[in-house]
Length: 270
Image (cartoon, rainbow, N blue to C red; front, side):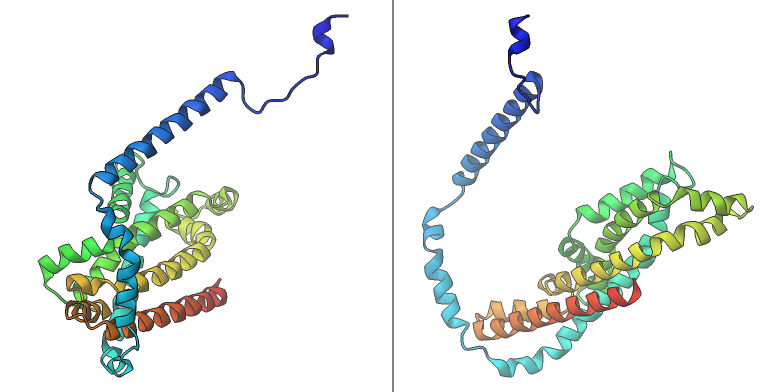
């Protein structure tokens, strides 16, 4: 009997090449972390970091007690913020709907020409933050709610389109083929075979995006796009910290209520 046959077999998850590759990746990751830490330390003034607890305590003492009488001046900015988020989301939904069908492999009219353009629109929308969109639009359209609405819409296109076109590509092909076998036109195939399958995902994604847009629209006023962010900028500019506390509380309540409402609507429609 061969002595090698009597040795116990040791199970290993990775072979030698895979183990070596993992060690190389870990070393590269550690080297990257060390490099990033050194790069961060070059411009970091650690005195301010160590003094930050004192600064937080000082600002916190100035923010209390809140100036609740200032709440009367926040109702209109809060309403503007909700309008920015809602109208921007609706506009984003209208624009994202065709983009998603043009980006999906199984519904695009041209994989070579049309789909890359749709994917570029999605990538461009997702890569630019709504605050940057608002900053650009304020420079073009001037300050006001319109810039904020369009900024929210442009940011929403990529989010909604990406999730929707992925859902379109995962539809049940058997159901689509059955409808096509009846002699249905391409538009009828989309209407009866694809749309019913992706509609729940589309509704859920749109509601989730509206919930996100409410949070994002609260800061658009910092660049002149209207909403409660404008009041926040004014209060911080004059160091009116008790008013800042009231603004923070109103934003918190608005976000909590919007999340609750979004969950209720999603549960009712899906």
